[in-house]
Length: 182
Image (cartoon, rainbow, N blue to C red):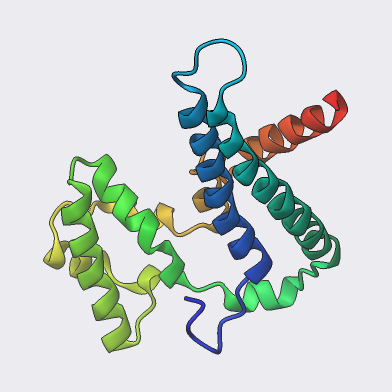
């Protein structure tokens, strides 16, 4: 949450992500203007300039900002490792339940209970005994401890745009190809 002062959010990335909505909106506006035009010039086309110039101004603002943010980003491995907490595995636990047939809404509620117990007792998620997890929901099984691996968690996001190494490589390859085409 950007609201909380102790957070160190990537503001440039958040604002760039938000600007993408504006760019998509401008594109949809142009599509709507053009959708029913007969051939030749029509006065409707007066309205295509606003979105175009707004989009150009937006791109000229965000590209240097995101470029500077990436160029100047510094990743301090010790800080990253210190901030790793087993609480970050809550999504993995929910995914585990979903993969075992639990509807996501129900899995979300179950994991909420698990996280509350973890916070109240001061016991990390990865240290809660299987019996306690099964007391919350019997669908937690013996293999649950395998979930608590940072590498496994990252690699489990094997989808387009995901965090797995092969997904990242595909994204970088696509970006590189895009740059070379220009």
